[in-house]
Image 1 (spheres, rainbow, N blue to C red):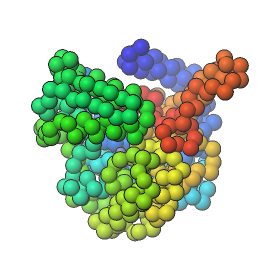
Image 2 (cartoon, rainbow, N blue to C red; image 1 turned 45 degrees about the vertical axis):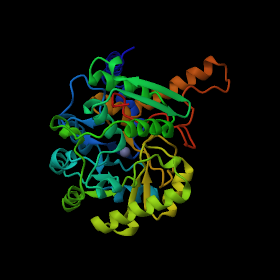
Image 3 (cartoon, protein in one colour; image 1 turned 120 degrees about the vertical axis):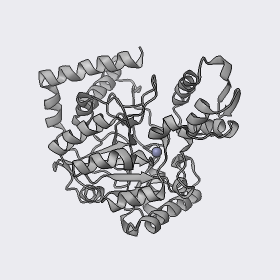
Image 4 (cartoon, protein in one colour; image 1 turned 135 degrees about the vertical axis):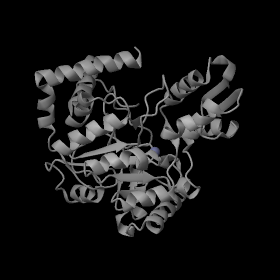
Length: 383
Ligand SMILES: [Zn+2]
């Protein structure tokens, strides 16, 4: 079943749930859950035929902010974190808006909309990338190289994966990227997937970001981050390197965390005891939670199910990811719990079919994670 068909069917389910009142019932059932949303960027510039993007459109973001500010107390991150830590977040209808990675469109597109709704959002930057003058993260660098760079063939060996990619096998650069990206996403183990990205990056010549891609890919600079702080936004750490933290040796990870925290304090004037970390790639596992605590961060954010039992560990505060193509009914299904309920029913049905056996359809923990993370994105958002 294609992604378009899946989305159409899901949309029918969400709209049916709105019409029958089921959506309102699940929202009422989960009304006590505090809500942290994870965005990446806001831009209307998309390539025709592109795969689902992490960047939402301006209209989508506008509609989502209107909904959130009407239904929730949308508070700054530090207020949200303190309420989670002291247990007052539950039942208070609190929400907070965050962004990961570091794009120029945070300043040009997201900021005016945030100010229109009076929302103080949080932006998490990869500090080594900003030190390098604002550079693309690995995945986007690879995407640019595959799409626009001169290349004929790539040989990959990482773990058990052996690929020989020939450009001639793909009719057109966009088609080549879609095929390669699909294969990369199919590698569930994040460090292994990261190794594949790195292998492609090392083999392909560098290329500049073409003008038509600037809206999506122009990276943020320290000047942009300083501007966000001046405008009342919070800027925290998304790590130093954007490598999967669970794959780093502990001493190297602690060095990276200390370097990133120090850069946030020095460049942006954030108080040392108020620096919050957002882990690259979402969930990372208990060893990394401990490293974040040891490095002196106030708290740390994952991307995972917001319906985890209370209380949350302040170094594993879950956020719901939102990507392009998330309609309002889909967003309501994600934050109101309908998506979560349907996924649990699917797991129960799988267990029932196996007559109480040990198999659990979605219970395989994500790489390095200590617990299952069944729902990390609003349904309809980017994968
Ligand atoms: Zn990231």
